[in-house]
Amino acid sequence: MASAPESPKSQVKPWPRLRRGLEHDFSVVKVREDVVADPRTNLEHGRVRMECADWVNVIAVTKQDELVMVRQFRFGIDAATLEVPGGVIDPGEDPATAAVRELEEETGYRAGRLEPLGGVHPNPAFQGNRCFSYLALDCERVSDGNQDDGEDIAVELYPRADVPRLILEGHITHSLVVVAFFLERLRAEAKR
Image (cartoon, rainbow, N blue to C red; front, side, top):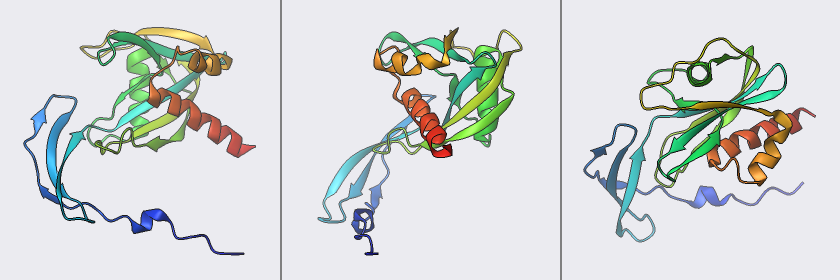
């Protein structure tokens, strides 16, 4: 068998940071512009960096094969979006622990089983954080939830089979939620 051609990533050099920019703290994100050197030309370039906590998303499925979804207002688009439960991973918190916590806080549901689906970098062009996705099975409602200050979340149930339609018809538009469902499908196909 012929060997694979050399990967292009092995030819890419890091861009050294020459100066760290002034940081602006906006609670959920810190933003700064660093100055870096192009390794090919040595020219200086400004690059924006957003420091965010890691996040978690939970595809929650009840024993009746219904999806536990949340609808909430998103300020970036000035509209409500349909999403899976999720949120910020607290400092030092395990992503699976955060998934369990966020699911119950936002929806009042608790999972019978939790399976990791994988993690992605939301936007590595200027963010260093990760978003971890989980599949929560056999979910049961155990409370009314305990939303954080600044959250106003409506819980909605959908047949699990509706996922492709909800995405293709534009009811689910949050890219990290779409990724979570894609990771779930990839895992299911890999088990076949």
